[in-house]
Length: 483
Image 1: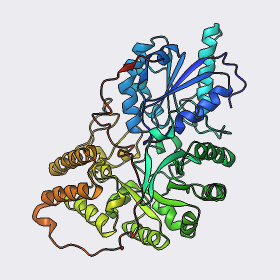
Image 2: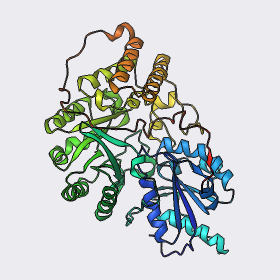
Image 3: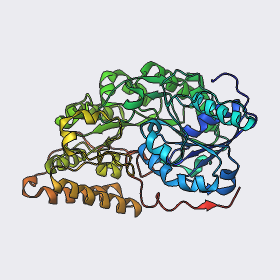
């Protein structure tokens, strides 16, 4: 921790806008650090709460978490109302997307930006703000990006909304409260499209085992029957992660969990797949992204279509579920390759495991993206757009862009109406087949892997970090008069 600061009861407000339907770790962790340094900390999670006028007005420092694209878009949406409620507060944005959008955030009134390992940076910022209150000369601001190794504190979740306000797990046996934590940050891989790369550039950092277990312990005490590990890749440090889940399962044998792991790592650590099942894992999320090998090569995913088939088969053998995520609309997508993606989802028996928004994800190209190294990208991108926080791009085939708009409408409408995943999948597939036209063919391909026999566990949160915010999320900011 940044050395011994007395923050003299500085009033700090930590705000989250969106964290995948989870109680935000990105607030709980810095809350512990700031409280330990003497600050008075409050939190607002705008995914489940409204802007509280009294809480905003009292803050000396307002720090907004921007861990992903959706959250950053929403932060910029809410910043005018935040500034209007408290013109005198210092505003900081922290998280993965802060540094890569520094210029635009500063234009919106943000003074400090912190990316990477941000906890000690937030304490340093709080020290600067406290110094200003006492008339002390200002210290140097912390760097916008830090990948320092930190000794973490147990997250402080005391001011956050209760777990029953967040996404739940649905299985064949019922519906359960879900907690979440992180065992690692960053990633040792450099997938070309990944927003982690501009910040961590192939590095990852661990959260100490005792801290992770203590965080799980407090959430189980609060009612969590399932834990999501929010690491970008749980197998960046497999020995560290498996030691945690073994200890976790020994202490809480009835509490299940899920995690995110690359296909490449699942192939490499095939021997750990049964251990995941034995220690209470229900499903693994993996960024499959595509099934056509040219796209996978362009994205530098380091796996192939055949690898995905192998992992799905292996999971079925041991009774685990794979929850794939995709980036189905890219400059390499064709009408036929999109239809092939849908056909392969069905052949692998995964239609019930894929959140419908995954069929509508369009490649995001943020600042610093390695996608800008590719000639094909440079041929289709336009100048950086501050409103969307990305480089807009146009597909060489206008029909693919029209198909994306149609799929997004089908998914958004179906999700809002609570339609079954199977129904949304069928509608998306019909649209894709119509767009592909005569080239699509009519023959149904045989299943590559038998469908899962038992109920597929799913989370109730319908959206995703790389999806654009919904119209509902972008409603005008309204101040709640409560303190």
